[in-house]
Length: 171
Image 1: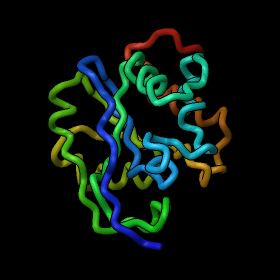
Image 2 (image 1 turned 180 degrees about the vertical axis):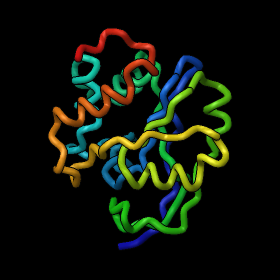
Image 3 (image 1 turned 90 degrees about the vertical axis):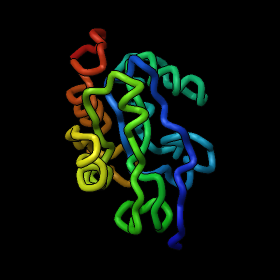
């Protein structure tokens, strides 16, 4: 059922954040669990844990620490939209976030999007204001089973290496 959704979370970043990771909008499961990528089958947190060779973060605090420890930032492209459940394809009536504060208060030099829809929306709605091109990564959503877990880790490693300030990633 289509409904209006307002983005419920603050961005995760600090002054040392160098790469901004953007999704489209939190899913119903993420809104229910009050944090990003909270669907139990979403592979976002397992991919980052594998990439950084750390235990899988379970709590909101552990997830925030993982993002910040690796000079990342996390948010979404949209401040609000109309959407049917978690179906990105159904998104209409979009209002993008204003990234000016996040970009001003951090060291972000690269933006990556977790999925084609997030990338398309960012490029169309946000890039004219930020002046920063985004890189599209495969979605970690449970709906995207075309890409294996190992392939996801490789894509994220390639996109994040050399930009986040980490040198402990193994290839």
